Amino acid sequence: MLFEFGFYSSLLLIPFAHGIIYSILLLIKAYKTENKSNYWLSIFLFLCSLFIAPWMLGFAGWYDNQPYRDVLFYTPFQQLFFMGPVIYFYTQSLLNPSFKLSKKDIFHFFPGIFYLLLMGSFLLYDQFIFGDYYFYKDGMDKDFESWYQYSGFASMTIYFGLSILYYNKYKKLIVQVTSNADTLLFRWIRNYLFAFLSMICIRLAFTLLSIIFPKLDSYQGTWWFFLMFSLILYYIAVTGYSNSISSKISFRMSVFDRNPILLTDNSASDKKEEAVIDIEHELVEPQASPEIEGWKSKIEDVLLTEKLYQNPELTLTDIAKKLNTNAAVISKAINQGFKMNFNDLINNYRVEAVKKMLEQGEHKKSTLLGIAFDCGFNSKATFNRAFKKNSGISPKEYTNKI
Image (cartoon, rainbow, N blue to C red; front, side):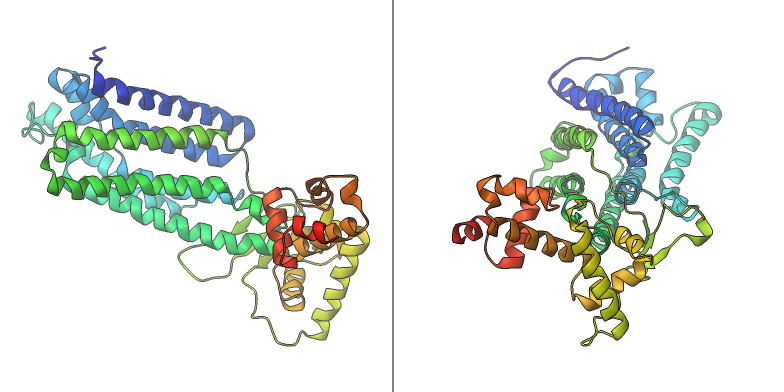
């Protein structure tokens, strides 16, 4: 197979090859771990690798030699209309373990399917009907046409926005239903969304700069964009493969309407009786009702007597099961009775437990972080943040006072 190794082709070959390799590794990882999000990331890496292929292969001599030239012409390597939806569904599958692609979701892929069919029709007409170049008589690859590049990156921008909206709604949900929200807010999600945004921004930057510096719009000048794109691809591949955190909170949510977020109980044996809980809580009333006060007392009692806050992965559902009720009742009681979300409530109990141990002199026998872990915290950053929010001073300052 023809491949002319040079400065331009070789530098793109490295991230291209690694993108394909990591795509395969993620497929294997997805199969072994049954984590659906890895399938989506694998597809995204594959699409990104294909995106840089024409520039890599072009500098390797493919556009100057047959049959390689026709392979580049008639193979739609750059699938811009698929990249946006794939990253959007990757976001959903990473945050929501119960996410499934519905029939309505297929509409997101229609622009990409249309482009595939369009390229297929060009191939059929030129090769089997006209017998020569008709659509490619200008010698230009259709993947590089302005309308496709601009609309493709516009599509990516839209799906980036949808991913941000989904993540923001998820953040509102997670503090209501789990006590380790900081862990499940996923630094990786912020990082890969920023990386995805960078892919879009560098395209915009090169487009604007090419107005001032026309050389950037040449085949060789545009190579620098693909080099920067491939470096971002490399980062997403390496860090995405190493990400091991996955959410265990299942829910139903849509970014297209203002319907309440629904928490679903996957542990229910009978799906007909599966709990569906409204997480968009009612406004906190100035005076809690007697019913709310009753549940508040029960929640306080079970937290203190059984020290449930020591469980670093305690969830709203765990409390509900202890009190033989559903999560909707407990969620409403916490929001209206304690005037705070579930995550802050449990962290307050943990902080108070830490204070008690410090007052008893436990810091002389154990490290401050060890005490925090014994009380239910699972990260130093979360502990410091919660302690300062509760007490107004850092754990170290509090210890010095003692």
